[in-house]
Image (cartoon, rainbow over all chains, first blue to last red; front, side):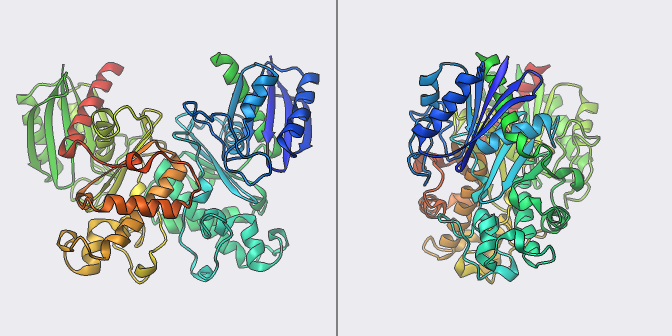
Length: 289
Length: 289
């Protein structure tokens, strides 16, 4: 068997073919344009690289509720042409093979859970902190979903005492977690990209405080066994000990969590988490048939 | 078959016997004293009322992690004598029948899900707002747990603009959800019990704001299909429309949720939710044998 992966991001799509041993045997990156143009390239790639099933991790919000009339659609995105686009329907019209349809963060969560930083862990939060903040949650070995998929980057937080004047950058909520801590919030506060702030800059204490506060909330609601952090902001590796320290202070000895060095970890698969997760979910879709 | 129920609260235990038709055929209420005295009464009750399995919903925090050496224990409670008490072990030493061991809020969540306000709903948050705030979460038809059980009453929130001076009443976190919105917070702010504040008092707008903020956060993380609200504070029924209105404002049209009148509902089983949930879980424990 060969599994197809479509990691469908707002700026680029990564397409890949993965074999039974979870080795990536082909990979291509294409720019995200209008749906018809982008999918034409997807079809060309998989016409040249035959697969038995495809896992799709799409930028959201998307409809993953199988009872819904718009299951398989991209929902309220500002990305031109994609709002209300029937992504899964277009794939099925091209070729009727098994598909697994979920979010970009969910496929990365599955990759890290089965092959990466949370191998063998059945209760996991995978969080990516970059231009936005998104979470994939695995509970009892399964992707958490309900009426829809999590949008856990948009939870409300209280502001750091040194940051009370900041209005946040989330167009919906202002000072939600994403509004306070995604990459663009650092640029908005300091006028330079986050990577240009020195590692000693006070910005990172504030950033660690917000990330730790969100992790405390996820821990209190989900009681996961591990939290895996990825995304551009988390390339700043000095953040990890700062987040762990702030987590302890904010949890205030209330709920029991595992050893923090194991509990809060960086991703292990780097850029491969998404496509490998897609392949694992394609395999699952094939087996469920 | 006859199922036993132990709803073990910090001030009272409710013991019950429930038949196959989920009818309560015996019930007794006892005061919570030291573990040995309290359990002596529990044994007397169930010696007189034979059952085939028992569901226990205990005040927390408790250890529900089957891999843990202290599985079945009550953990860090201020209640004299109960800290680190092996509750489940004491029950098994008395009689070796099947037990289901979980939190008081989890049993009520199961009762409401199977027989009450969330019948047939597989993804549910049950929240009780009284002297404390606790949540039982059902995800994909199962009680959500991981490293431990949820402590979702202690998530951090940001303060209402008219309430920024209030320090909160949570001994661990000050202004967490419980610290800002449990019954004692109203007493702390206004010097009288919550029930003595008139329905028009500005306190309720602030209260609705905090409850709605927490529900937005639960919705963004868990994407439940329904949220059921119980506990003493929720006896103030005028809070429901206020919470729904504030929920809409704070969600800011971001994530899709069901129709709000169905989504945010009061409990349906009143005081029976806990013992019925215990019985349903006792039945499950028996079937799993």
